[in-house]
Length: 311
Image (cartoon, rainbow, N blue to C red; front, side, top):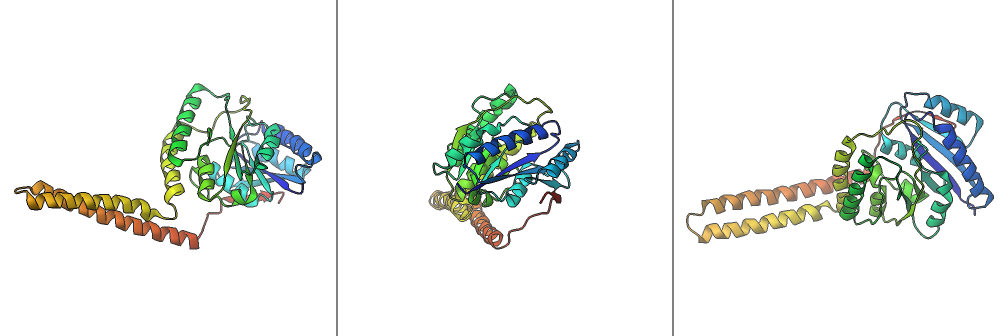
């Protein structure tokens, strides 16, 4: 089958695992090539401002393999920016993302591709058995439950970095902030179908997690943002208009109470307060519609990239 594979790997201070991960990816991708599931493959590491010897290791890999490439950031911009850059440079018909800590197993590439062939545009990995401490597993379960409920996208593991995409699905994603946790939600917003497979999760051998407790607070806010984008990104007035309508109706009721009942100053004050909020919600809705229209016409981004190796 004539289709190519790109593997995108955000990396930050993972010097001990990079060569082992590269070898495992190359071995498994070569098997897929021999079995004619893919025609060729490329690897895109995104060095997210590493301060260890990661870049030296990656330069050596690129020097001996023309299929290996590195996008080097000026400093640490975060996983969302790294994925956005990887998606921009990736040329494959299928794009697989994975973490650089070697907890993901490239042997699962075959199962991802087979699941995509069932008609999905994005296949997310599910770490059903996680080799992580309890303080990471419990918040993760809560996060996934809340995200699934708020977005309506039924997956077990949104935050797993091990995912496979059809090219058009990956290229359609506008990733920023901390939205790398909500890529299936953003894909659903764009009309793409998401599936899920269980994946192997190895115990981390080197280094340590780069995320602290503050990510859960950011995740709560981003979850609300992702739900809003899924349901109202193209029509924010539908949301603010509902609030405006309810405020106006309550204002009218209190106005009637103030008109027919004597000495109801409190009802008059409440009526004017709710009427003010009604006008406020309408104004916010109109401004949000203007912002959506502007961003559609004027997409912009920042250049985080210092150099591209092996381009």
